[in-house]
Length: 451
Image 1 (tube, rainbow, N blue to C red):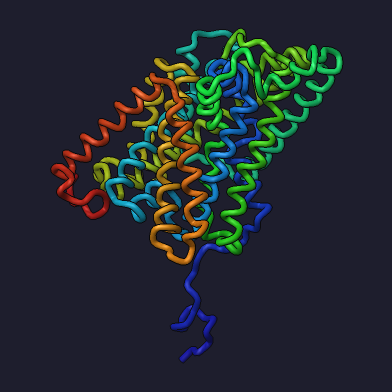
Image 2 (image 1 turned 90 degrees about the vertical axis):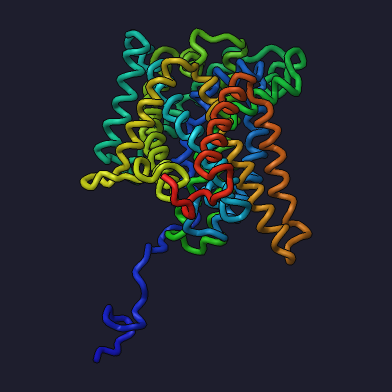
């Protein structure tokens, strides 16, 4: 009998698992790639319009809320190293019904993400060669869907190369911005601080509206928690990486939009959706206009493909738990191992949404779902690390409560149109959940046998 403890046949042989190879620097790089270093550029024009300038302040307010939420995500990832989603955290820590509603809100977030990517790509493509918006929009939606149905995913190395390329674009823009501002400096000290505070347009409501939109800059940081099983010292590094990514993203975003507002202090743009391309053109000429436009177009195509796949996987996870009909949403194509039903459904919703929504409204609707999910994670962290953990009651309440309050304030700052559309979506989810559970008299999710 083989008694070697390392041999496969030995009863004490280690169970195969994922290799814990990622350190803190690799995690931070992964998070920055997820968010993209140019994240504030596509949203710049809409944030200027909503916040009446004040984009730097809006980005920094969003960063504060995301830093608290990042701590809550990191702590929940330590508690549930294989769950990795707001849906799972809320479901386990608060109640399956609350988890279902958070999951329903996240669906809204995930469907809106490829929608605004398709809108932005169509607008950017028109800057290269003018065709009807609907032609470009339909083409990009079909591209996202086709790539996902074929199971094509970008490699980690390609993502790193793309992030490096976008970093070069940022450096080119900042270099051109410094040169432009040397030749055309803002008039007076007040002009230099106007991106932070403009007394003529500043109000709690306008800054809040801008911040509620600027939160889009940080969407994606929660993806770090999905790598818990591949990280060295995950209890320390997941939390620290999530916070560092939010902090670095916020600082880099603030620098970009500050330079952008100094170059273009007006509140009107030729095209609000691709406003940053016009800013780059003013700073560096047509070559920089086309460089920034093309770089953001390629980056947004990648984001759109990834966002649609993420939406399909979320629907698959909820279908597998039977929170939504398992037969349709948990079906996987054997050859590609892709939830094709979900990809096609999200593609159809993306196509319709991109034709009827503006980029700004779509971004606010995305944040409606994302901020609800963030509030859910903060509430779950509060329950676990304060209500249930008697050893941590002195400070266990502060971070999740602060994160919840800031996210709630940002959520309440969304436009009435976004709130109405999101409210209709949530009401639909509640009605559907009521029907599935016969008035919530039966359990939701994986315990349910309905559907």
